[in-house]
Image (cartoon, rainbow, N blue to C red; front, top):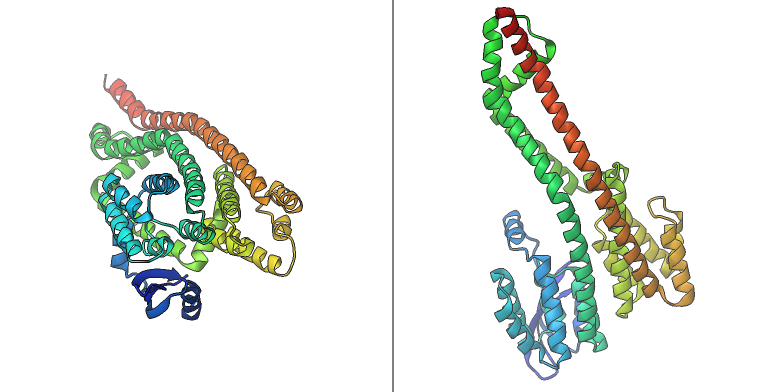
Length: 403
């Protein structure tokens, strides 16, 4: 959704600056008028160039810092510390230079009369749409401290889950990477010296030995070509999945991957349940909450389901009507949502669902690690067996024939 930068005068006649997110300029103007602001300038923020996007990537703020920011700001606001003063304190406590500059600029804008949510919207590399809408909800209801606490809790749960998943995959990734590096180095530096003796002997070599010698020779002389092909393939893949058709195909493929398909599904279910629960608990209308959630999930298929749900809700139907008919959503989710609608406790039901799916996700990742470890050992054993059969056995036979 486009972001519009504005300058305006507030009720006290002070000039304020900030940003507002809206589908078009007319809606942005209406939003600012509802805030009793007299618009001086309103300009749509230009899309980033490729160079600016690259800078944004390198300047991205770690999620851990954003979680800590929300938690500390909530504590200070709860203690009746003025927002500007709280932001100034956070500038001194933040170690990340990029984030320190952002918070300092946000403090200046808020001190000038801008809303906190509008100032945060200027820094999408740090604050997501979900974060900004939660803060805006807290400003509207007058419960910014409660909203920030709730937001910090939700962000911490997401961060903890991601950390556990990354931690579980560190060991298998390290072993697999080490195997590949050692294998390539052996093919380039070790295998050629062993095969020289075989070639000098003039004996007829088995097929496996000839293939291994050919692969070693290719890597030794054309490693740069292989590196270039891999780089081109990675670049093409990244460009393809950024296109609408490629992105959709890749998201569909995720559901059909063995083991990983279930992991991706649980990730999306946790994001949907937790984000939706947090938003409606903060008083955001269901249709608006679903619109925000559709951008948070991170999967085209789930986004389409969520947008279709918005149309169903606007037509007076149940929130769960679309999910009941979908094959990529487990039956438990829509059934529990129906119970939540009937009892008026949809936010609590969704929160429990998020906890349940997060636990299932942890178990799936743990099972994946337990499968990968013996699989790596089998692959290592197979690689050793190939080298023994292709090189060492012919060398042994050659030495036996000579003796």
